[in-house]
Image (tube, rainbow, N blue to C red; front, side):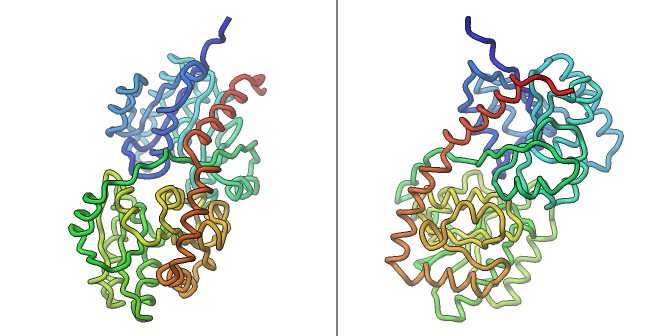
Length: 381
C-alpha cells in the first residue's frame, strides 16, 4: 500500500518572484513530487505567486502580517496562522524565510505543533537583526543554502540541527539574438563591453562597489559600461537607489551606468553581459553567479567567506577578488574584458559546474530528501 504524501505547510513572506528566495520556492513547487509531498502555502502579502501556485494546483492563501512594528496586525496574523495549522494538521511546517519564522513559530507553539517546525534560512546567519530572534524561536532543524551558512548558524545559540540545500535553477534558454539586439539598443549600451550586477537595490548587495570598480576600469582605458538590474523591491532600502546615482555622478561614470529598475526576467540582461558580478561582502549563496554560469557568461565575485567561494572555483569556473577590495575586483574584471582565452575557459568550466552542482533537479531532490527524513523521524520531545 502506497504511503500518503507528507502534508507540508509552507509560509513565505513575499509573494513576488523578485529574489532568489521566492524563485527557489516557485522552482521547488513546480518540481516537487506530489506523491511524496503535498504542499500548502501561506504568503504574508498578496502577489502574483498566489495565482501561479493556483495554476499548479497548489492551495495558497494570504495572511497579511504588515510591518514588524505593527503589533496588532502581527498578533492577528499569528492567530490566523494558528487556525490554519490546526485546520491543516501538517506533518511539517516550513518557514521559508527569516521573517516568516518570526510569525510562524509563535503560531506553531499556540497550535501545539512546535515539534513539527522547520526554518529554511536563505541568508547568511547574522546578516540582519532578525536572525537572532528567529534562531531563538523553536525549530527542529534549520535549512541553509551553503556550508558557510551552516558554519555561521552553528555558532548561534541556541544550537539547532542544520542541513544544507544549495539553490539551483532550470536550464535557461538563451534569448533569440534579435531580442538581445533590441534589448541592447533599448539600454543604450552600444558596442561597449558590459559588466553587470543583478539584485535588489540594497547596500549589502554591493552595487556601489560595482560602480567604483567601473570607474577604475574606465580610467584604465576599458570601453566598458555598467548595468545594474533590479529595483527597490518591497521598499526595503528606498534611499539606496538615489545614493547609487549620486555615487556614479561623483565618480564621473553616471553616463556609463544603466539602471533597469525591477524586471520580470533578469536572464536576457545577464546574457548581454560580458561579466556577471557579485559584489556582496556578506552573501550566503549567490544565485546570479549560477545564472551567469548556466548562460555561458564569465562570473566574478568577492571571496567573502560565504556562498560565492563555494560556487566559483577561482581561475576555473570564475574569478574571485579579495573581500571588499575594489581595486582587485576591477583587476579581475579587467582580465575578463581583455583575455579571450581566459573567458573561453571560464565559460566552459562554469557551465560544467552549473550542470554538476546547481540544477533545479538537484536542489529539489535534496530538499525532498531532507523534508521526508524530518517528517518521518520520531517527533522530538
